[in-house]
Structures are given as structure tokens and as C-alpha cells.
Length: 264
Image 1 (cartoon, rainbow, N blue to C red):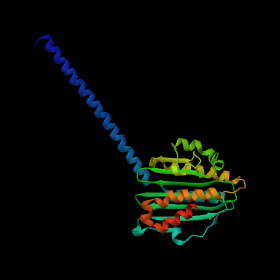
Image 2 (spheres, helix red, strand yellow):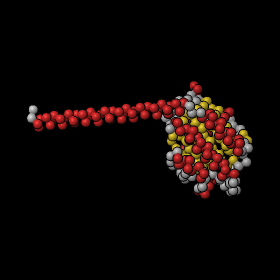
Image 3 (cartoon, rainbow, N blue to C red):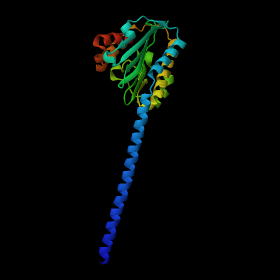
Image 4 (cartoon, helix red, strand yellow):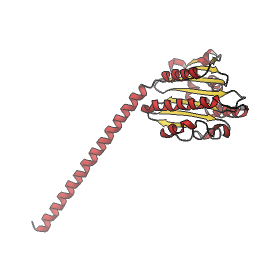
């Protein structure tokens, strides 16, 4: 074989060796990525199984009890606890009032393997110039949705929850639903988290609640009837009442009454 043939043979071998090396490197990279994804998925599934929403609800109730003189509001028995047919889910609800809040509603929503979460609304007395507060944390199969914001007139919401904004930003909070934009603060908590971040999400929600209660303590007199009516209609037309799973599980009539309990 002449020199040119030998050179071509060596070049071909080098190309083959280079291709094999690249292929092996790529295979190792893909294996590492797949292993990482599998480990992340396993961690998320374990974290999702360990989510303790009942404990979070108890924690919120304790915080409210520590800071406020709660007076229970009477509830129809099926609003206090509603069970879906065939044991497919339940919603347990508590309601209170205080000297500055005409209504506090705290719910624990449990639909096994599909959804478990909490919802909390605080509606001020209408003779106070203060916004409403609405929050929820929902543990879905693959993620955590957490929201906490104030709703009302611009001057009521502009500086609200200011002390919690940095925490909300660190969680990657984005804008809330378009239908609530005119009433919301534009800097509330609206985040989608990995299941293992659930404690961070709950801590941020709790911080938002603490900020609201602190601001409510110094709320000036005024009239908030109209913005509260706007808040009700926005959430009644676009909130839980419109969710097909809830309507199917608990019935349209009940979901209508539940929405009014939360937001009216």
C-alpha cells in the first residue's frame, strides 16, 4: 500500500475513533440527564406524598386565633363539610368574623390522588378603607400552585403586602389571572412550584397573610362596599365555581353556595 493509501486509512480510523468518542460522550451525557430526571421525579413524588395540607390549615387557624378575636360564623352543615359521592373527595370549611373583618373563610379541599389544598379569604368590614385578601395553595399531582394577593381599589392595594414582595419574587411569582388584574395589587404571590418547594410556598403565603393583618390593624375608616362587590363578582364568575371537577364532584348548586360563602 502506498503512502497515500496508508494516510487515507489512518484518517478513516481517526474519524471512526472520533465519532465513537463523541457517541460515548453523548451517551454518558444522556444517561446522566435521564438519571437526574428520574431522581428529580422520585424526589417530587415523595415530596408530594408528604404534603401536609391539614397541618397547614391548622397552622393558619392558629395564626388567626393568636392575632384576632375570632367569632365563629354559623354555617349550613353541608358547607361546613361536604363529601363527594363514593368517597371521591371532601371540602371542610370554617368561617369567622372579627371587629375589622366581616368574614374569614378557611377551607381544606381534599380529592385523593388529584388535588389537596387550602383556600383562605378575608373580607374587611365595609366601613374600612381596606382591600380583600384571597389566597390558596393547591397540591396537584406534579406541581404546587400558590397564590396570595389583595383586591380592591388602586390606593388600597398599591402598597399592600410590600414587606412580602422580596419573598414572592424569589419564588418566581408572576402576574395573576387576567380577569383579576384590575382589582389585584400587581405584586402579589402567584407561583407554580415543584412539590418539594411546598414549605416555601406555604411560608410565603403565611408571610402575605401576616403583612395583610398588619396593614389591616391600621386601616382608616372609609367605604369599601363597591370594591368588595367587584371582588365578589370577579371571583364568582371566574373562580372555583367555574371549575368542572368541583361541579361534577359536589354539584352545581353546592358550588354556587360555596363560592358565595368564600367571596360575597
